[in-house]
Length: 190
Image 1 (cartoon, rainbow, N blue to C red):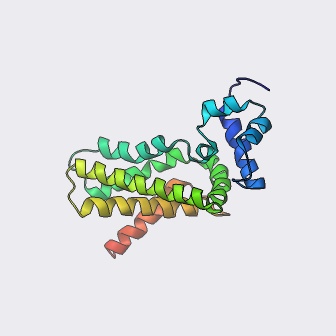
Image 2 (spheres, rainbow, N blue to C red):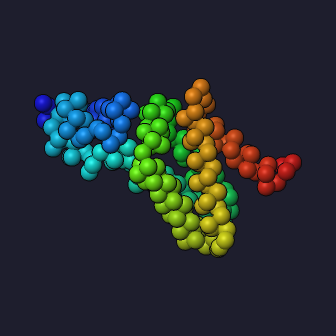
Image 3 (tube, helix red, strand yellow):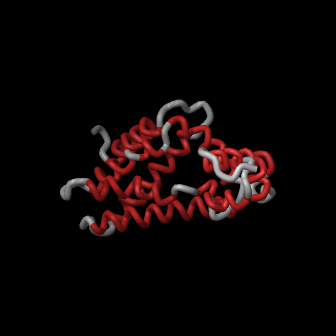
């Protein structure tokens, strides 16, 4: 078995996802993932704390994706515009070449209650962190919480559409479509 090779992390992720899809998440062991990726278990644990992390790695980067545009916006930016800017950034985190991974990942998460719970927890944490960032900018309640909840809902709905079979638009295009629908809902005729 190879001890250390470039691309090991990506190979582990690809192999693990394939095994999870074929055998089921709970039925797949770290030893099987490592063997299929032609590395040792120790190498697996250099990259991931456990097999769940294969599916949820990058959480800090994901949250920062939303928080950085909020922090960097001019002081007088309206809460709705802050959320729109944060959502705009999601396209860079989920480029089209990541769609197949996300499409394969989603049924694995939906098929395992503990993974669904973690995914919902990830979105809840994101909502809390966005709300906190908005409050730190001086956005008062209930506007901060409403904006945070709305932003995460728009992201979630956009992401679900992006991974739908036969969808070929970019995540950015779908986010823009959802934001236009929300704007029309709030301000008909604008």
